[in-house]
Length: 100
Image (cartoon, rainbow, N blue to C red; front, side):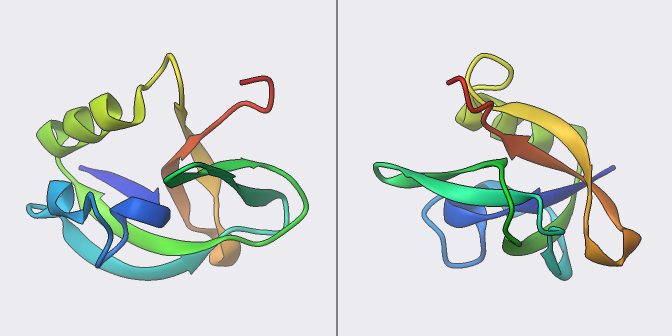
């Protein structure tokens, strides 16, 4: 199982939240002030920056993670990597390198 930090369309009520139907909601979370969200048309992207970003934590299985990897275009578009959240929680998140 993997702890996943989601923001935007994967959050509860979001367009793609149904991909997390088999996941366990673990609560709300926030990044430290070293990220920000940028708008990419219909969806946001998490990039390095100087702001806090709020999101949600889910415990996901390998099949769910693979489905979300495909949605996010990992690793060609977004990169899924481990980040440290406020409170010391470590989670995977999808980040967009600034060069993209």
